[in-house]
Length: 104
Image 1: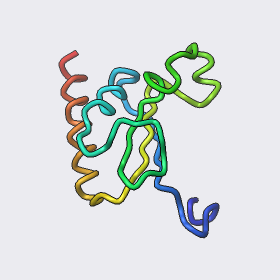
Image 2: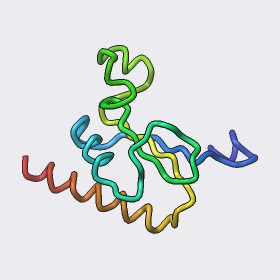
Image 3: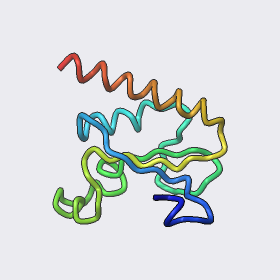
Image 4: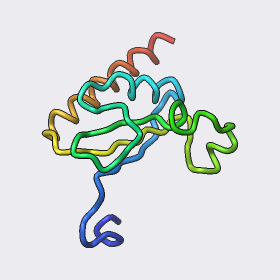
């Protein structure tokens, strides 16, 4: 779909939801080491944000959802670091969440 709708290239912005909801998404954002926990986008360094606990925290649940922010949402802005290092960083954060979910 990206090739169809963005034939001149795609963005380095990736948004996704995670199993485990709010706490899991917040843990991932707080656990990564290479991704900086910042709200700005389009930097040369990779950034991560959990909007429900940061940029949109002052809004009610309904207001958050009306803007497309769900409790499980993570937003990445991928920078110029080595992609394998970034994937390893995320994988480590996902592992922390997976261990947490299994202990509940």
